[in-house]
Image 1 (cartoon, rainbow, N blue to C red):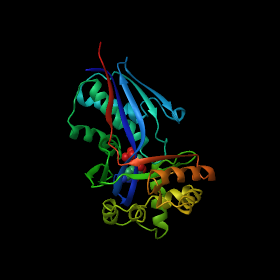
Image 2: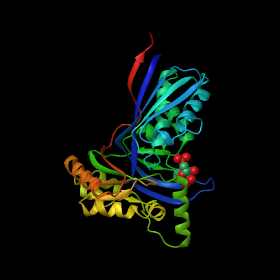
Image 3: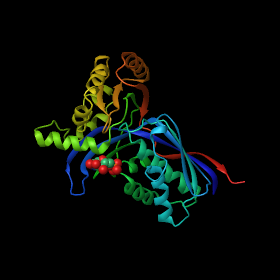
Image 4: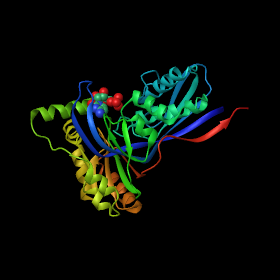
Length: 305
Ligand code: C5P
C-alpha cells in the first residue's frame, strides 16, 4: 500500500442539459451531455489520525472542512462500505471554481474515493466505486469517468459518447456562486408561470460532436438551466453577449452557473478571446481549457518506507 496518493480530477461542463419535471424524490430527470475539461483539483491522501481535510488554493476559505464537505463524506462512505478505519489526512488543492456549476465539489468526492481506495488498498472494482459515487451526488460518477458522456436519470447513469475532436473553451468565472437547488427551483417557478424554451433531445449535439467543424457544435449548445441562472443573476446576460460579440462560436451557462463557457475554434482563438473578455470586465476571472480529458486518476504515489 502506498504512503500517499495524489489524484487529479477535472471540472465538467454540460454541452447539452435537458431538464425534465421534478420527480417524487425531488430530483429532476435529465438528459445531459457531460464534457470533462482541463481545469483540475488535486486530492492527496496520506496516513492520518482519524480523518482530516485541509483545503488550499482559490476559494479555499469558503469551503467547510468537516463532514459537510463532500470529500470527507466520500472517505466515510468508502470506509463504511469496505470496513476499513476512516483514517487519512486529505489535502485538497482547488483549481476548479467553487460553486460555479462545474462540479467542483463532486470532483473532490470522486478524487477522494480514488485516493483513499488506493491508500487503504481496498481496490474496489470500477462499478462499485461508481455506485458509491452515485450515492454521494448526481455528478460524482461523471467526475470519476471523465471524457464526454451522456447522462440520464438524475445524471448518474452514464453512456460514453464518441467525441474524437479536442475542443477549446474559454471559461468566465463569476463573482460568488449559485446554489444548485436554487437554480432548479427557479426553473420550476419559471415553468409554472409560463413557457420557457426547452433544449429538447440531445441528438443534434451528439452528431455535432463528431463533426470536424467546431461552429457546428457551437450552434447546438443548450442548457435548460440557463434561463433560471439568468433570472437569478441577470448580469450573466452581458457576459454571454460579450463572448458572442467577440467571436465565440457558442456560449452557455455551465450547469447551474454562474460560470459561463465559450467555444473557440482553436487554442489561439481561445487565448485571444480570454484576454478580450478579461479586459471587458464582464466576469471575475477568465481561464482557457480543453476537453475531453480523463476522469479522476492517480498521478503520483509515494511508497511506504
Ligand atoms: O445530486 P446533487 O447533490 O449534486 O444535487 C444537488 C441538488 O440539485 C439537489 O438537491 C436538487 O435540488 C438539484 N438537482 C435536481 N435534479 C438533478 C440533480 C440535482 O433537482 N438531476
